[in-house]
Length: 349
Image (cartoon, rainbow, N blue to C red; front, side, top):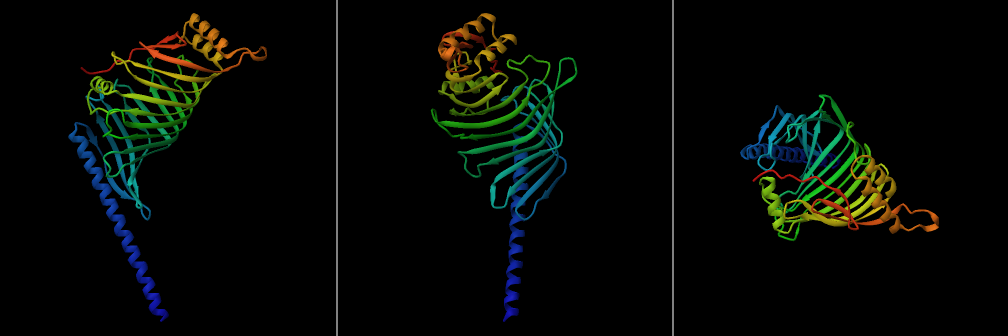
């Protein structure tokens, strides 16, 4: 009797292992076929995709593809000038229990070419992207996380300047079929420990301790088109962006706030919002010292903020809520012009 039970248990274990192996093979095959279909689809849309060897990996709880020497370039006309990206090793994996969630991990020294022709090299201690959505055409989710990220950017004198990020995480949800007035996208991100490239007079210094925000894009999102055409279509459909700034610590500034933004007749950003600012005197002094605001604008802004804050106990309070507006590229506070923003140039007809 015991022997029969032992034989039955062993048989069940063998069947379980065989079923697990069959399931892994099925998921790995689908992953491989899906990647090849994606490559062919990109090529059909005019992108150039080059890959070296491709091998399968993972076992037990996941299936993966290891792609060597992956390179993709293209993107026009939606991205004038196009972009290019190269990574020596790209690992694509799916959890056997959640086959509709794809994890993408680029490894090694990344090479990125921007639309203006600038070449940037990027290396990260950790960098992971997650893509989900499955068979639902009305929803797609992209998540990214990383740490120890460093980018080397070229300087005008031929040298290089480094930018680094201690940690970052973000989420982007797209709803491609959203109607006018509905949510077409949402985003959320937190970035810590940013060291900005040297050689530039940044408005509030070269170190951003933290920036964290979330927002909603009201659509519908336009089809793939040159930027000017896409921006015009989005504006004409009543597109807008609602942004909630949870935290910003940059030099003397600590701030939170919210704003609603859209595009005006000239396709320039416009909107209104409120900022909760801590350390406003030092912030405006820094903006004046770094050439962002004129001396008269700094003086006027500090005077108005001092009146708004009051003078409790003989000391100016350094925390205040400030109404802000953006119109005709001019950022204003209580009808006091602070700065003229650069014009946004949209490529395309």
